[in-house]
Length: 232
Image 1 (cartoon, rainbow, N blue to C red):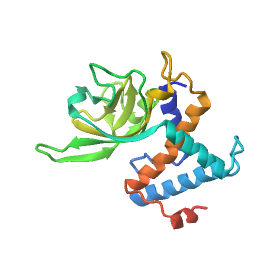
Image 2: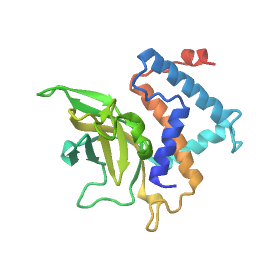
Image 3: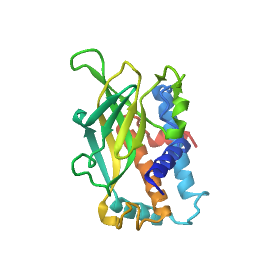
Image 4: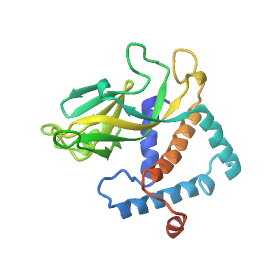
């Protein structure tokens, strides 16, 4: 499974967990959506939809094992590693900087937000980005063939870079990333994916989805147990 396929699978996973990336939700609607998504995730993993027939205890151990293969990191991508083009800002991901990029380093996106400058000076606002697969990009851009209008920041991953697609009059100065990093110690050969079977890639994506739910909670979209019970 390639990095692009893993990102696409992550996007599909998150959509199945409730599609909470939509900018149109109010805070209460977003919280409710997260509750439903988390509840669905718990039911799917630990009850009927359990193709590997693992116990809760066994699955938690597997999650712990997978956690040992990857590292969760926060990172602020510096403005010095940015290329500005029409309707987009391209940031070099940590670890891919020239002149000595690490070709075996692989990162799986979890969450990012962009700093948009508002007028002059140091006034800016952090806005969450939406992860978009390249072939779905047109769905989020109005009149994309002639005069693109971006309704919210979009994220694409291309060759060790993150592209923030935005409106023509906006400027992104920094990108804050939460991501999973796969260490080079578990790879070998010329491919960064050697030695990792596809089901392990899928499990890492599942793990990332679960961690992302927790990260979202940490970001202020609280999920209380009482609210979770109300969704049952």
